[in-house]
Each structure stands twice: as C-alpha cells, then as structure tokens.
Image (cartoon, rainbow, N blue to C red; front, side, top):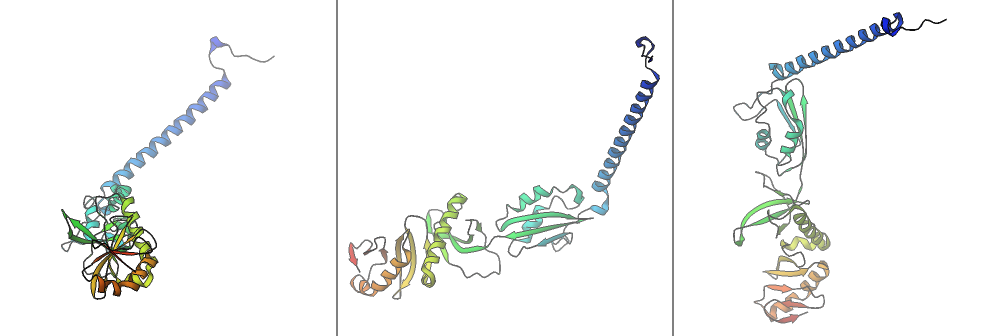
Length: 278
C-alpha cells in the first residue's frame, strides 16, 4: 500500500528534495546572471573610459591619424572630419556608427558610406563617391544668365566643384537646387539621352537647356555664329542633321536669325522671323 502525502504534515521527503534542487538551480541561475551583468557593466565602463580607446583629435595641420579615410577623391576631407568632431577625445566605443554614416551621406559628393571601429582607438571611413556627368549652370536671383557653375550626377545630385580637378563634360542648364531630386534626375536623363542620340555631333553643343522637358534647347556654333535650336523632346539627331544640311542657305536668307524651331520634322522656323527654310 503506497504512502500518500498528508496535507497537514507539509511536504513529503520526495517533494522536499525536489524543491531543494529547484531552489539550488534557481539560485545558480540568478548568481550567473548577476555575474554576467556585473562583468558587462565593468566592461562597458572600461571601454567607455579607458584612455587606450580614446579617438585622437586632429593635429596642428588639421589631420587626424586616428581617422582612416578610403575612397574620398573629391569629397572634402575637412567635411568628413567635421562629421566626427564630437567624437575626438572620446572612446571609439561611444561612437554612434549609423548616425555618423547618415551625416556623411549629407555631403554632396558622398553616394554611400560605411563607418567601422578599428580597435583599440581608430575609425575607418569608406566613401563611395558620386560620378559627375555634366557641368551645371545654376541661375542666381532673377537673372538666369548669371549664376554659378557646379557639377551634377546621373541621379540629379548637385556637386560642388572640387579644387584642382579637371573634367571633360557637357554643360546643361534648366536645373535648380529647389527642384525635387526626381525632377532633377529626369532632366539629367533627358540631357544624357540627347547626347547619346546625337553621338559625335554632341561635341558641337556648348549648352543643353532642359528647363522645359517638352522642348529641349541647345546652343552651338554654326557657320561661325552661335545659334539656339529648339529640338522638342524626341528625334534629336534627325532634326539637328536637317538643320545643319540647310543652315547655309537659311543664313543667307535670314542672317540676323539666331534661334530656330525644329520641332516640326518637315520644316525649320526662324523664331521671330515668321519664315521657313529647308
């Protein structure tokens, strides 16, 4: 006959041993957890305060040997150093990597960036730069003929001109800083499509105006004179070839004409003159 537990007499011998084992296991887990938290806190304090992990600031010449920068050809080094100005003199352990990466992406020449710690006390920054595809004339104030010259990439990002750098690129206008990035990108793509379609003839263009995407206007020299051509939004090559084929005759008839509308494929109109040629 089995012996049953009497509720009034408390735990039986078997239950008491099980409870002791459970209590011992729980105490061991709590002790282990407390030890881990203690070690983490000590390690955290060590990494945050030990001078061995301190990021050295720039020297007298403005450079910081503790900051390794790779891939920055045209990105101003001073702009990169400025991103980390709050981190110099502090532990690299405290540096917010993703926050610094986002700040680097605000620099116009930076297309992508990565920031990593090099223990014990250095930082590595890897930059992927944007590639300019054209010079960009930016209007200033109410006078569209005046302004500054910058660079622009295929995504419509406006880039400051780096010092002592030479580029052989086409020139475009009709893009402003105030425009949205998709708008700028679409207009750059339109200019690049025109250049691609014209092939070697694009070398004759001195400027491409994409201010009106439905009517691209180009400036070039023809017969020793500077003329403007309204090409519309397609058939760029055939329209320009047609103009060059008949320009000599048109110049004799209308030597004062400097702007021509080529948007109708079967005719060339001297703008403001009301005459047709070709």
